Amino acid sequence: MQRLYDSVEPRVMDADMLKLAVGEQGPQEEAGQLARQEGILFKDVVSLRLDFQNILRIDSLWQFENLRKLQLDNNIIEKIEGLEHLVHLVWLDLSFNNIEAIEGLDTLVNLEDLSLFNNRITKIDSLDALVKLQVLSLGNNQIGNMMNIIYLRRFKDLRSLSLSGNPIAESEDYKMFICAYLPNLVYLDFRRIDDHTKELAESKHQYSIDELKHRENLIQARLDDELARQVELEKHKAAFVEHLNGSFLFDSMYTEDVEGNKLAYLPGVGELLQGYKDKFVIICLNIFEYGLKQQEKRKLELDTFNECIKEAIQENQEQGKHRIAKFEEKHLLSLNAIREESNLTNIEVRIVEYSEDITELFNVLMTLEMQLVEQLEEIINMFERNIMDLVALFIENVQSLMAQCRDLENHHHEKLLEISINTLEKILKGELDEDLPEDVRALFVDKDTIVNAVGASHDIHLLKIDNREDELVTRTNSWCTHLVDTIHKDEVMRNRRRVKEINQYIDHIQNELDTLECGDVID
Image 1 (tube, rainbow, N blue to C red):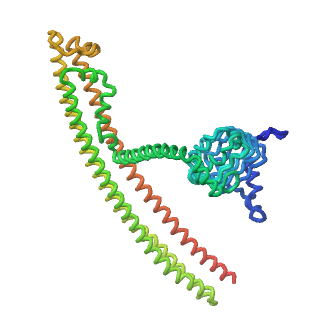
Image 2: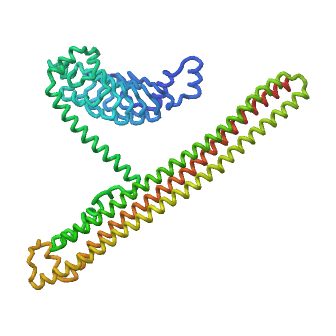
Image 3: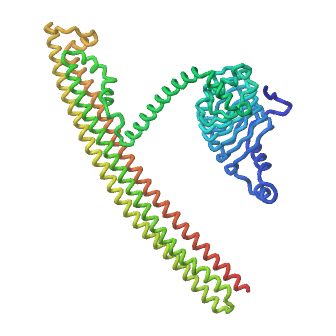
């Protein structure tokens, strides 16, 4: 069932082993010799074979970032690990090892073919990330529960499955169960499933399948709802107004407000609290709706800016291409003329003329780039002013609405304090008809105690409002600053790349001329 440690010392994958494998499996003949002399970069390797190496532990593969095929069969590997950087892996063979559990595959989102044949695996799980899985080989393991098959229903692209040699394969219903519960499967244990078998399997397990589909649909509906909520929440976060489309902020003020919750039992406070909450939530909704509208304006401003930048660059590039095309036409004629000219004086004159043409082209291209820099700088500065004005207006209006929340809280505080003192007077006179809980009555020992309790509640509420306002303002300003900084940095990098491109092109054609000039001098 599994490979045993043999006389060869168990090995851990290291740099020396990998270099040797890459060298042996690289290109042969002249290209291979050159690669071995200069060294093959691990990041350039797309296929790697490490079978029959007596490897005990997978390690040191982090540099193989573009690897697509990895062969690790016929080793003594006990645990799947060290593969997290191989995100482009499509094919993985871990057959004939000593692996007991499926794990360590969470980042291999592009994996299509996985072989774990002949290991010690007892359960099929931890494959959720392998959304592109098409071929799964799990034969000759220790899988005994048929319910493992249900887990594989989530892999819609799975076409080939191998489970022969497992305890479940001994079940009389093995083939029918798999064909019924995995209807998209084409091959089972390397044999094609015919349509008649599929029909019989579906008929035999129809009731159970229908029931399972119903449960799956309910689960999927819940997942879809959750995904929709997450998408909506991200939209609200982008507008900096998440959780302001309801009573969340108001409710959060009372989450840690012990005294406030106790005072809610006082006569008349329930009605007062409900009125306060209704007005508070309306203001929050106003902030929320206003935030979404302002986000749309900011998005439109950014989209317009990006379009202007794109158009300016494209127009400038077209002018540059046109000038280069005209130069290229003359370029070929000039080079041919120099080559065909036999008179040394005429050659020198033509070379000087051609050098002047190259200098003129360089000046034209650099002038175009400088014009573009100035144009883009103007566009960027205008955008910066507009986006900062939008952000400033948004913050100013939100702060005004938040001030209304504080006004409501102050009004509520005054009313609550008034009710609390009246209640205290009734208790002291023995005129309170309502029966209050003991922990609430404990607040009414004297005026200072109740005033402090009401004040503590008020402070908590104001702190929550202030914190939410500060969070919104800080995040909005940070977003704006980061956006503007990124735009400026991107423009600097674009300009550097363009200047480098121009210089490289001019150097190239100048080198052509220099080479030609040297040849003519020698001749």
